[in-house]
Length: 70
Image 1 (cartoon, rainbow, N blue to C red):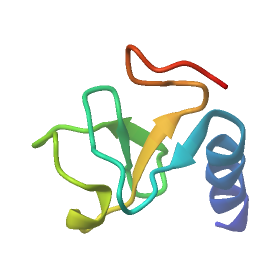
Image 2: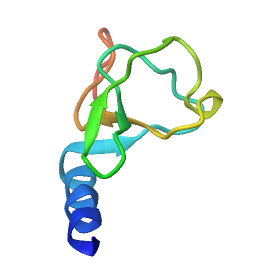
Image 3: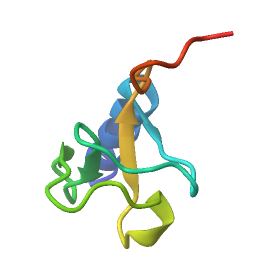
Image 4: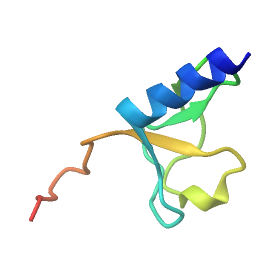
């Protein structure tokens, strides 16, 4: 059991980041799928991440169109 939890935590650290409370959820974001990993978000978009019961995750390096890195 701890091996599964450990592997899920590793995936989160390497590929995904948890959205901050004030970030808007958009297409391409993910939700935790129990002990099996993550699945694409299948629900409303355009809401703040803190409006959802489950934690929302986004791929690292993914930025909205039109934004630049300073």
